[in-house]
Structure formats: structure tokens, C-alpha cells
Image (cartoon, rainbow over all chains, first blue to last red):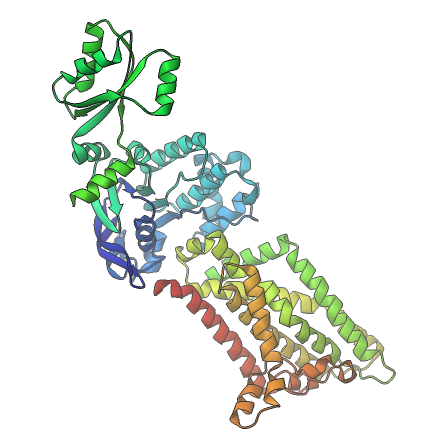
Amino acid sequence: MIRVEHMYKNFGPYPAVIDVSFEVLKGEIVGFLGPNGAGKTTTMRTITGYLPPTSGNITVSGFDTVKYSLEARKHIGYLPETVPLYLDMTVIDYLTFMGRIRGMSRKWVEERIPKVIDHVKLGDYRNTLVGKLSKGYRQRTGIAQAILHEPDVLIMDEPTIGIDPIQVVETRELISQLGQSHTLLISSHILPEVSTICPRVLVISDGRIVADDKPSNLSQRLSGNERIELGVSGIDPKTAISAIRKIKNIIDVRSDTRAEKLDQASKENYHSILVDTKSNNNSSEKIAKLIVDNGWGLRNLTPLPMTLEEIFLQLTQDK
Amino acid sequence: MKNIIIILSKELKTYFSSPMAYIVAAAYLAITGFFFVASVSDAFSEASIRGYLAGATFFMIFMSPAITMRLIAEEQKLGTLELLLTSPIKEAEVVIGKFLAAFFIVIIMVILSMYFVIILYIFGDPDTGPLFNGLLGLLLYASSTLAIGLFASALSPNQIVGLVVGSGILTALTIVDFVASRIQGIGSDILSFMQLGASFSVFDLGALGVAESGHFADFARGIFSVTDVVFYISITIIFLLLTVIILESRRWR
């Protein structure tokens, strides 16, 4: 569906994207992960045909985005990072206009819009001016225009940025649903978000693709280590730490010194410990067994995902 | 063609749903009305629309950029330009659709002001030929000012920049005879030829309605001149092309 071959994009003398190649197959949901300024938006803009690549080829649904730009654009639904909306139009008028400039007939658009509005749950706001909608609903309106013309490929640039947590959850659900019927490319700088939605992640850093893998493999492949947060009670923390250290494959055990954790732990009268361990060793089970066998209290045991910063640091150091 | 009509109708809808078009139309009728009355209320004044044309060409220096300032600057600011230009639609279609919407607004204003003409026919005996020739000239002049305004609107996401730059270009092209008359040789000829509107002498109320030089002068006098028609159409096309080039420039920046 999307094929990018050795794509370079320079802005003047500055390279923004360097030798990027990847392919997104029909029905795939691919997350595009990278810190701000890594080249995510630039790559997406070249795929949508908004910017031509400096060199390299991009095809969408088999159409070259430079040579057959207009044809390629018909197959793309695009949600840029700042949701592009005409604030003085109603939701219906906006969607009608967007459908029409994509070459849909008036009749087709009129039949299609109610379905799309139901899909993104905008029903109560169909006649509201877009400028009066909350950010979350503007986001939905943006998604509605992107899926309106039933594109093969959906490209969303940071679709959950700047909306409140409840709406983030709803938007993610919506995106997961869309993934069932579209080929999706979603950019984000939040790893957990990408890992919940996308079975495949492309990591971009300083204009280069540094990883292309499943999100679960990614954090393991990166370090081979896992971090576990542990809450124990009814035992002197030093005794507990030295006992856990004796378990096989444990790399490091220490008291959790993060302020909010200390605070909570002292309030609820337990001790918080961080454990670094090698992956795939059932370390969690072994730690839990140790604590239960000794008759200590186990308040929590949580595997901590790696932060994005740690991942980028590792990926870029590896190469 | 279909895409142009879609853009055109969207822009017209936006014009009529905001107060801008109504305010500009009211100001246009007031200003041209003042010039019209001043030019026909003397004892032996002739039954013509020269005063009206003088007022209209003067006011369009500010009015045309005010009408067009929103058209592209706002799309840039809202980010909708990215959406338009990633839709299966050409830059030229966007530009032409927007230009036609602005031109349509001006045509409506000119039609609204036609009660001046009716008054002339009731109370006087105007020459029909020169009168309609003048109106034709006004529309040609308007189209070139709108193209310049649209070009200015594409320069930045800020509407005020579009207004100031547009009015600046139009003012320069209006007072260029002032400079041309003070130099000699081919430079003077070129500058004179560049004069877009009527000479600023039209603002001398004593000589009201007489555009002494510039491409509008013959139209104001009631003379049809192919050169001037070609000039206005060329200016319109050149600035619309420049606008398209600005929109396309993101590709090679």
C-alpha cells in the first residue's frame, strides 16, 4: 500500500530525512515513533504528496506520489498534526466540502456523511460550528474528514496530541477500529500509545529509521532487561533487598527513591523497591514466590515499560 | 472545472456568513455614492458615472486587498492549506476558485450600486455606450486589483500583512505617474505604462471624474481601448500565476 524507497528530503542544506525505506502492506497498522524533530512529519508529508522527496521513490496504492500525485492523493486520508478545520463552517458543511474536493459526487457525500458521523460519534454536533467544538471533538471531525472518502491508506500525524486523557482513550479505540478496515500509519512520540495500537513500529531518529519491529520485541531487543516495581511490607527493606538479590538473573535491586513513590509508601506503610532483571526469566514469579514464602506482605508488583528516552538513547547508541 | 466551482461556492458561503462582505459593500456604496453625488450635483454637470468610477477605483485600492486578505492567509494559519493541497486538486484550481469568489463579491457590489445609473436615466440623458464601457473598465480594473490582493494574501499566514502589502502595491501602481512625470526617457514611459488605476488627479474634486492618464483614463472618458483591456487581463493572469507559484514553492524550498 505504501512503499518508500531510499527517500531523502533536504530543507535547503539541512537533511531532514536520510535514506528512509519501508513498506506498509494492506491492512497493516504501523506506528511511526520518534522524538520531536526526528522527521516524522516530513516523512508523512512526502507520502501525502504535500512535499516531494529530494530523491527516492514513494508509491501509494501503486501510484508514484510525484508523477501521479493527484491519483495517489485520492487513495490517502490524511490527518495533519494541527487538525485542519474551517472554524466558521458547521461539521456537516465542512465534511461536505472535504468530500467534494476529493471528487465525490454530492449525492454520494450526502449518503456517506451520516455513516462517518456515527462512526466517530459526532452525532450531537453535526450542525455545530467547528470553531465551537472542544478539542477532542475537533479531533474527531478531523478523523471524519480523513476517512470520509473511504481511502485505502490512512495517515495520522500525532492523532492524540493535546486532548484530554478520556478523549485520548476514546480516540485510541477509534483508531484501533479504523485499523480493521484501513491501512494505517500513525506517528507518535509516546511508546505506550503506539504499543497498544500498532503491531508494528518504525522508530525514526535524526531522519533515519533505526528500528522496525513489534513493540514488545523492541523494548526487549533493546536492552534485554526489564524493570519491576515492587511494594513490600512487614519486613526490613534491607533484608528484602539482599534476599531478592540472591535470585538468579537479577541485575540490580534498590530502594525506589522517586519522591511520589516514597510519599505513597510511607503513607500506606510499605516499602517500594526497583528491580532490574534480564528478560524472559519469569523473574516476577520468582520474586513473588520469595516474598510469599517468607510470609512478607506484597502490595504491588508492576513491570515498568521503558521510557521513550531510554529507547532512543539505546537505539542510537547501538548504530 | 468542477473543483473550481466547489472552491468558489465554499468561499462565497464563507463571505456571506461573516460580516466582512456586508461591511465592505456598505462602505463601497457610501464612498462611491459620495463621489457620484459630488460629480453630478453642480448646475451644468454632465450625466455620467465618471464620479462614481473615480470613487470606485480609488476605494478598490483598499477594498480589494480587504476582500482577498482572508482567502489564502487564513488557510495557511488554520493548516487547511495542507489539507487542500493533499486533496486531488491542483494549486491553480484553488487559486482560480478563490479569485472568482472575490470577483463575484465585487460584481454584486457593482450591481448594487447600479441605482446610480437608474437615477441618471430618470433625471438626465446619459450616453449609454460610454457608460457601459466605463463599467466594463471598472470590472477589468477590479479583477487586476483582486489578483494583486490574492497574491499578497499568499505571502504570509497573517491577514494584515496581506492587506498592507496588497494596498501598498496598488497604491504604488496608482501614484506611479507622479514619479513618471518627474523623470525622462524610457524609464518614464515604462513607469507610465505600469500605472494601474486612474491618475491621482481624480482626487482633486474640482477635476472630478477626469482620469488624466493611466490605463483607466480611456475607460473613464468612455473610450474603448484594446490595449487597456489586454493590460488588465494580463495583470490579472500574471498575479494569479504568481500566487500559484507561491503555493507550489513549498515543493522546492
